[in-house]
Length: 198
Length: 265
Picture 1 (tube, rainbow over the protein chains, first blue to last red):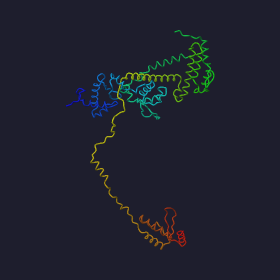
Picture 2 (picture 1 turned 45 degrees about the horizontal axis):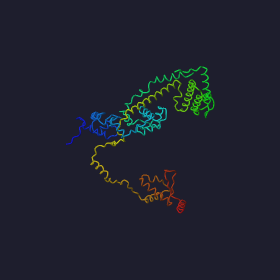
Picture 3 (picture 1 turned 45 degrees about the vertical axis):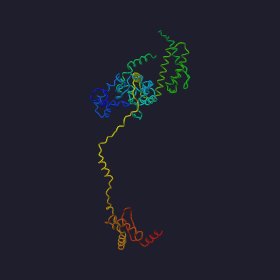
Picture 4 (picture 1 turned 30 degrees about the horizontal axis):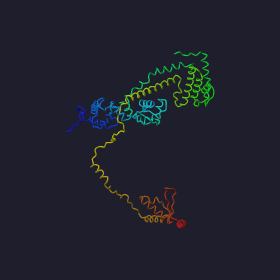
């Protein structure tokens, strides 16, 4: 009699792990524990245990497929060692040629979103209409309702988190870690002012 | 590196040269100094002044000299920067938060904004590095193939119960009795006779008084009889105001003739 391939050592969640594997293979976006639990019609704690087993099974260096926790869910991706081969067959159009302006706009939306175009422009000091349109087209940001005056507000998408390999937006470094010391900047401005001829 | 130190005399000469820089712009023609005075007196709208033109003129003048004069450049920079700041404030009139600030506060605000921007720039650099580090991550992209979720879940349904409800709905409703709507109309002739009898005894009578105690239907038929008598010219009717008592009088000879002529007309 044919028996299922024992990819995972005997475990109480063996069958459930196989179901979750199947769900993740079919999905084209990360699936959260809640979604997996509902689809598998099982218990969330058991799903977590099964995911732990799968993560071990599909870890970098052990399999060509890697299970990762990304964009608030779980998803399969290709292993890094297969990246070169993948690159010969597939493109990465979403992140290709992201300009400095696009990255700065992404940073504003990721850290301060949902925010409107005028708000982004205020942070960056220049008009951002075309940059925002480009990012929407790439699927890295999307509309997130409207502000008080009816202006469209934007936030980053799960695709953004996935492209940048972020488990969630909480995985971004704190904003005050960037940009150096405010006092230092102030000091430089003051010393410049002192050198100004009377 | 040896740094050229200009004498006091040279500085004053050069300083004068910056202020006396002859400008030939669309909106203004004359020395730079005068332009500044006019702008400060608000006699010349700064929006129309081509600052780039001023810079070009200065750079051309500078190129005519053999050596780079840092002091002249410095002063020019300060003046042009001040001009640009004024122009920028004029262009962004909506940003009133900067207009009311003292110079120190404005510098503070500027430093704060620069700091904010540096942070965002830092975050953008981090994203760029992250992107480079994640360049070898390949994953499946595509529209979400997730099955639509059943938002509303119905409780278990019994088909027999549904059939029973439908059967009840399909049944003929019981016939509604119209018995209470049946009306009995007394003949008009009865009231004709009654009114003629009254008029045989009296010259006039009060309609309301005569029909008091009758049902509404009987009163209506009595009124029809009254109209019939009026049509035949047997009575004349009077009513002082709408809803006032109707006075009925036996018709005289003249009224009969009038009634007749009206009828034949």
